[in-house]
Length: 621
Image 1 (tube, rainbow, N blue to C red):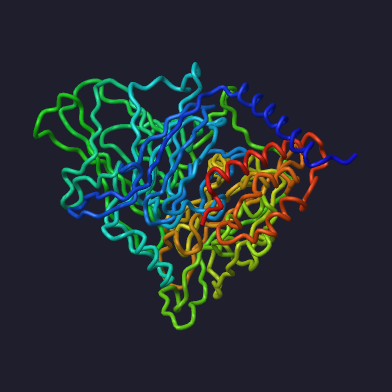
Image 2 (image 1 turned 30 degrees about the horizontal axis):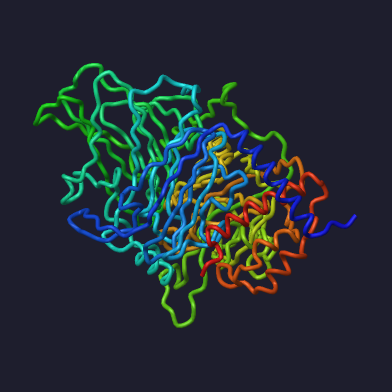
């Protein structure tokens, strides 16, 4: 029976109101509202003052605090001369993929003078995460903590700490970081390294002209402190230790782990780790350095310096001795293997390890560093005059000019991306041995669709082999595998390359079930270090499990959606022909879902999403 557009419109709105009312009734948390003004601020470090991009003039940026089940709404207004997006690192974006933040992946950037509202709910997570800019290298100064408390009435799976303290590791450049990465992209070489590491934005006394810029953690005797550690450094894994004190690891990446004690921990870029610090029962008559420095096994250049904060006990006297911890050697891979091997999911009845047990599709990914040809009439600084290029399965990600999620949702992917990302390496070779002679990679914006993106369909199988030098390897066995399985169930899979520690992500794009398989900020913008023509690889032997109860999230368009954009100008990230846009809204992909219930859900979801896009001026030039 035919349904008129007017009747469908009225029915859809009534259904939407019912669904939204039910959704509100089921909401167990509260809504926290934040206003982030992106603005330039003058900051002095290392006796050098420069203008940096900040949120509300703060460096590091403001803390977001929520409980599991809370809704977070952040209105971001861009007042700087750069395009901006913000990413909520590690937050599971369940049916809110447009709030994830990677520029040109889940959204168009927020342009100067424009604003955008990020709206998402914390589901099934508690612990420490963080937010940061997700375009170019703005994340070098644009970042801050996310603290997720348990639901009211739900205790920690450990004794309640006396106090909780966020500690964020970062990097500081005297130069303009946008100029640094711009030069690297133009020349194809590695970017210039940072001038210092920082703790909560402060370089500390081990750097020149920085004694007054030192983070000090003041504690009482006989107390337990929860330190929420975040590695916001761009490119390096870091060792961290507090002199004469033991740390108990209790949570990693917003997932509780089986507690274990260590004097030193290792934290990768983008990773978070919660530790319990138990202070001495009596006053120690001393102060203690808290230091961090990089773990590096490749031959590239890097910032080989040490950052320090100071642990002080209350009522300390002047001229006390200052003890310094002993950190592992720079390339201590045995420590890496032993430490990561201890990470285990808590796996209790209240906090089970939700690992899928069945496998629908198997993927094999090789993550590495290759080369791309140097453009004509250019001089490039990569191996043999080429440009360095990060790649997965020999494909280096090319940044589109239209947001991938937007293109997928509207069924307008032609010319934006191709859905044929290889599930096996295009050129097989010995992935843990001698690199091939030909290290050239292809460039492209290529995706691989999954059936259902509401759960991260990724499960690591058997092993991760990590090259520790050009001629030797170490395998992390099942223990290391469990660590990555736990991390992969959080919405984005983070790997760390051993030569620079640069994160690479597999983004779950929802709605639509698409996946962007590529590097976090594009092929060469992630800080690869030049070390000759040879290429070290991190080889992931994996399998992907796509678990779906229905064929949800199809490319569905109904005539009712047309009313929301009758007055919309012909815009998208780059341009959007108005005729093609309205044709897509009124006719293409109608009734792709066979289930009536799924169809109604999709109508409601589509309306909510399109209204959000319009309110946030996603299509504004």
